[in-house]
Amino acid sequence: MLIPDMVGRVWVIAETCAACAAAVPRGKLLNGGWPSSSKEAAPPEKPKVAQKRPVPAARAEASARERALNCPICKEEETQARGEDETDADTAAFGPAPAGWSPPLVYRRYAEDLLGYLDDVLVGPTPETRLLAMACALRLRPNGTFNLVNDDLGEQRLSLPWQTLADLIKSGWLETSLRDVKAADKGAPAAVCRIPSLTNDPGAIGVPNNARSRVNGWMQRAVTHQLLTGQPAGIRLAAFYVTSRCGPAGEAVISTRDMTALCCLSSRSLAVPVLLRLLELGWLAKVEPETHPGRPVRVLASSQILNLVPGTSSGQTARPTPINLQEQGFKVAQWVDRYVACHGHGPRLRELFRAHCVENPAAPWTDAQLQEELRGLASRGWLHIDNNRWYRIRPGQKYLRRRAQHQAALRPARISHPVPSRKGPAVGPQVSHGVLSFGEQDTLIEVTDISSSCSPKVTHNPTRRESTALPRGLWTIPGAEAILGPPPPLPPNGTES
Image (cartoon, rainbow, N blue to C red; front, top):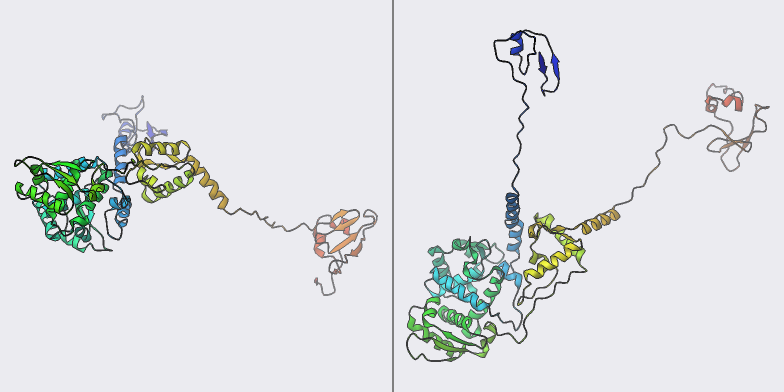
């Protein structure tokens, strides 16, 4: 009979009856034994070990990206990045527009798509709610949320700002707490607002994510222009609509039907009076009277607002600022190293290069420009990239080697101290040119002829302290009596002094 151990690797042969062999667990009956009525015991099975299922690469990649998108440190930094006026983090990142800046021609299409989206979902039955909804949509982040403080409502110059915000909340288009927005004063955390219909599709408003803050600034400069001071929301919203429809020369053809729907005018017959009011305010330089009701009206923007008309640049096309990081490779890699240590993931490309270069708000860097510069840093060994995944950007090998060398230079050098011997220094006599030396050289013994004389002549060293007698411990050394002679007698008191 074979009996394995607990693991099943060592077998022990034992003689026993068939009944006992059947009762032994994990036992196996060899040929020649008594037959057993019970079934033969099965061979030992390998212990079952719970194995972890491999995580699919796509799932692991998605989890890494989700962790980077939902990084709490990034969200906290976005909240803290708000300025004294508690503006949105995305708006504050671009800063104010430079003097003489005019919106590009593509902003005309952005404004048309944004106003069309708000009209399709029937957001805001009044010009006040439509104006506030447009400002909220332009503050939207990719996750469908944005921050709002009570001062942001004052920027819109609404007659009843809190009632207008309450109307948007009641309609279901905006989700937030009116109490939180009122409590979000300077120094207090901003209220987080969410637009449910745009959570999964923020691009439905027709404005790209990288242009929303600039379109928002353009809209704010138009509706808060000094020519529109004290005017109701319907006049200011119509002024923005007319400006967005103007061409580079300032001319526009306005459809009264579209203007009535997009600007939330109560009647189609109010479109022409609103245009005439803008003519009186100096916003428009010319308004051709309509020959037949319902036909488009031709208008001409005044010279005072030409800088707000899309496509009216000052003759020179704005170009993106160059990214020159040829001599800042170590600095960039060090910044990435600290960012990864703090956040746990790599930075976005635009965030990385904005930390070291200044971007022109009128001409932002293109994706091809950012990718080219990133590949240049990776080819020189300063950064490590993984298939252009921004959250996997890490410092390169060149930076890691230089950092290790720098840390080694700062590390204090080790000083090796000699380990003292437990036996102490050798005290045996040494003969050199007929002179015996005893370690400390307190006493020198001049040896004239060791073989013929066993009574050495003791000579005192004048540079050392006086020594009257040799220590008796020298005679305990094997062979010392043959060289030094017999040991000196003990003093009368029987002990050494």
